[in-house]
Image (cartoon, rainbow, N blue to C red):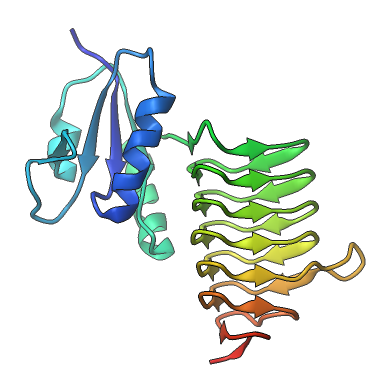
Length: 213
């Protein structure tokens, strides 16, 4: 019997953390799950087959969908384009242990890990990775291909540009409706940094309070 085929693109640590979430999400659906990895790895990881991209394309299936579990946001974007160019769907992965409240819009391709909280009146772009125990408070606007490492605390009225990376345990101070705190495109917030003011596009900040590296 030909069944739907779901691929987790990336068999590294990120992908291995996402596979159980997707498996849980698809419980009750008769579907096949595989890792997709372009490099040489074992034929199976954690009991799931590992296929190269061309091998994945060659599998006969009812339909194909992919979740992109790649931490590097530029590579993630490029893979997304390749997937969509082949007419393959992008699947969102949402942990059953995440909480999403009122009036939240999240673009396609998101991966929302366990114990994440996204509160109310929030707009988030495509391919957002929000790792374990992070939160996004009210009235935030987050761009495309943004990554939150585990334990990020993003308080209310914060605007984050495309491809920004926020390191594990970082804290972003609350802005206001009239003057949101802004983190520019491709900015990097270091692990454990405490961000109290705007971060320019492309800057890397570390420390408490966060300063340019």
